[in-house]
Length: 221
Image (cartoon, rainbow, N blue to C red; front, side, top):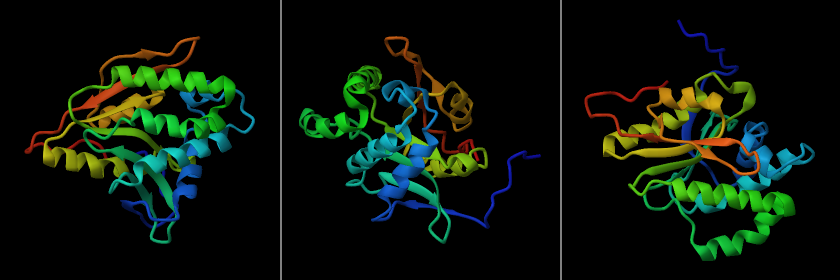
């Protein structure tokens, strides 16, 4: 028997983000990542952290939005956003040096003088560990904190993972919270290593998911 809490509304659907939703999506992800260890390491001090995380996710969406389905949401029919995920298709996960240089002033505004070098450390560590095999990349996913544990987040991810299975394509992510590892494992991901950030920073766990065989349905609900 399921022990998930009941949803406080009738239902929801999974769809691509709509024009004009970037601010609401950024705010939702900021709330979801408010206690994230890596975000806290890059943005030390609780004052203003959620606001700065929201600014970060506005920038992250700019990178994803030119791609069809790059930003996906779980939302009610009335437009209430419940969860959001950013996806990069195979071969499109890494920005160019020109793009990084152009975005640098904006990221400096997010992380500040102390946090910007740490953000660079995180990016470098993730890039070095990133697998070469073509895959779908999930850099960020978050559920409204009050709805975590209701199955909304897994439903959001399951749509793309079902496509991965159908197309025979793997998926990859980095988990910044140990408590989230079992959630991703239920969706078919497995931990492939550990990235220990310097200066006493948190540990990030890369996770890989092979596509499920055609005759075996994907796990997760």
